Image (cartoon, rainbow over all chains, first blue to last red; front, side, top):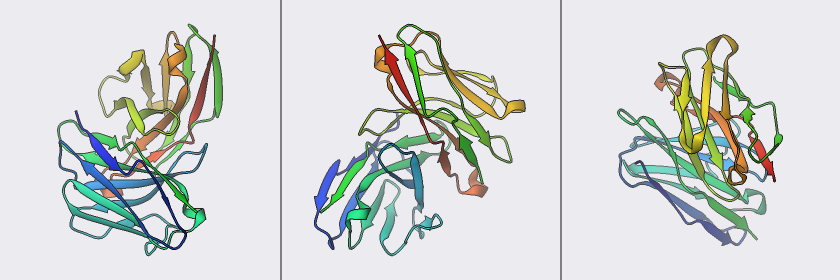
Length: 116
Length: 115
């Protein structure tokens, strides 16, 4: 089946530093990946759509300069939270879209980011 | 753009009782519909999905869902709930390529199972 690996599972960083989160599709190629943010006891909010070889498409209200997305290959998308602040603390989840046979969205296990 | 409504924030059922979680969607074309389950601090696991064809869809763990176009609904059901089913359940609607293949989630329903 389709597997997506997200790393790290959790990270604690100091305010003002940057953090990179990786999302890899292990057994399929994903031209499209998605990044979500989930606050405690809330649903998943789509932050951006990551397209291989092109710029990411950000949802309204998401700061593209703060949340840098790179999708340099068909199996890897990264989300970098730049100049992190405590309000960026959250649970970030990626999803990879499998096209064609076996169409569907496969999710990573999420990254718990805590900014201190 | 698509949207999803899950009207029940919390539901409590007794172990062994039947379960129905409600989901209504809004989308201008034939939707791709999904149900996911999430345990605390974990990612999402796909329970089932509907793209086309038979409107009654069978999923994992004994779950099923029925697509009703006239009601714009995709309710999740299970005939007998187990304590291990306690989790949060999300209904989602996926868009086609012209809308960026986006997957949008409902607010979620937290299921509690009492013994």
